[in-house]
Length: 265
Image 1 (spheres, rainbow, N blue to C red):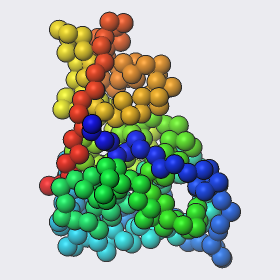
Image 2 (cartoon, rainbow, N blue to C red):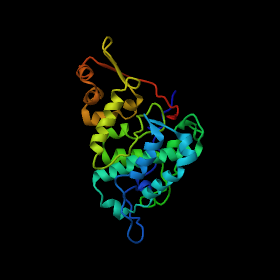
Image 3 (cartoon, one colour):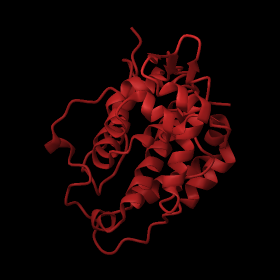
Image 4 (tube, rainbow, N blue to C red):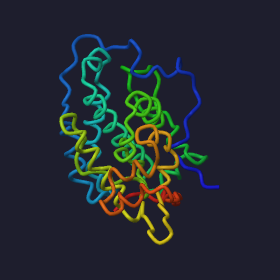
């Protein structure tokens, strides 16, 4: 049996994971947060090309830049966060997931797969290593950000094409940050790129078979809640000829194996 890291949620009560609902705050006024996430874009533009990450270069030369950006995320206090718009919060957490994933990889680099971290499959996603004092007193995990914040609080299925778990089977990591003023367009673009990538999703007209990434299996409920069915969701972002074909009633859906090898270059 092949274990997938992202879907596994660490069991905990809502009381123990009062993310973004707590009352913790920093004393005094906090510095204005850069909602353009320019520091993150600087890192991405330098070390990410066509979705592949130069982890060696980043580890040797770029860790200081990454740390500066991560500290800016961690410096946000709860009252400040509560004043933000939905899109500002959404961009904050999508970028945080991607940036802390890279931090986790660098902490264990060199390695062949994020699944190599920890003793059990998916351990990397359950590892509590992220300090976000405004939202919880103890550390949080990538699973906490994905399942308890992004999925539960935003109910935006396109996030599954934006958050990147450092694997080749994932969507491509963009060479720019997600920004609140542009995030709807960016999420649409990420969805189109992923759906139309024939290495991850494809349609066989002869057999009427729609072969999809395992992401569509793991988070099927998210996509079906919004579109009614997986083919209907895929049709929104597929190329026009494929979009018309996959919405037919006789289409069979199957899921492809996931490539957990590192998205490095």
